[in-house]
Image (cartoon, rainbow, N blue to C red):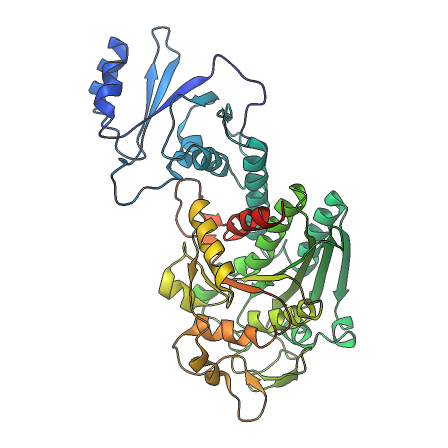
Length: 460
């Protein structure tokens, strides 16, 4: 995505004045008389999200007024200014006064400038912003560019974003930052002891693979990111209905988001030994597809009974997590679009996260709030662990019954993490169902910014 920021300061930038219902009267009184009359004629009241372009005597744009919530409002959308790129005429703009949060408003402007135009080329009006004073614009641009990477990967349809194409994207990222790159493909997964990844992906004509990217000084703390890369999910033999399959191109959203997070980490040159693992598969239907009640031995050595072939994400993550755990990383993070139960409980905008590390949990919650990248802690509830019991194997991947699906998924993954110093699991949605300021409809970057800021604080 081209940068939305004007690199050269310009005195002619059009001012954007932020107003609330409380402050609007005073702002209106300070306007030139023709502009004030124009605003009154348009019945502008600084309603949140409303935008008014005020003309100059020569017919040019004199300034823009944009409505925000009052300071006293119970709920304020700190990304509200992210609607501006879609509302403003082409031009260069600047903030004339401070919104509720200047840094987040600047980030929102950048995130709101995103367009997915791979298949539908169109002339886009160029709306650019002069970076406000006191804002680390390099860090803002870093986060916005990474979010665009995640969105582009998720928005690309599955015919152009299979396991091979996802690996190509990871390899390009590795080359950009001088990281090492390896990929285990097809039957080599069985030979190198990744049976669950192979089982999920073996029915597809597009071979499954395990993507492995490493970067940074080996002497630095080990941080490993694992992302679910199911490039399309039919549900397997436990096939989804058409409505449930409609946006399953987004089922590699965990992979897209760990790549975005890795890009931020590498671009910021954080002092970590970074490893990224992505099991990339397509869960297809064919004569050789894995079946309900099949049993596979995992990399960890646990025999896994298949309770449901549509609970495939936790299977591929299990083998990748087991590999990551062997290195005993200081921090192991996995992201995946895993359960409908998480959406039922918390909706599309608020992913749950799980960890036993109280200090890590507090830090995740703090940075999620600070970065307007919402996350909500859920419990790794020990009494539910028995629900994963199998009568014929060590563990079942999908307990019967509809209760606590996100928790039991986390408990399943926990079985494959025993040696990492700290582990964080996030059950993201990776999609914005309807457009919001700074969050266009489609693929979304979730949890990556909050975790990046956490890592920046620890390992800058």
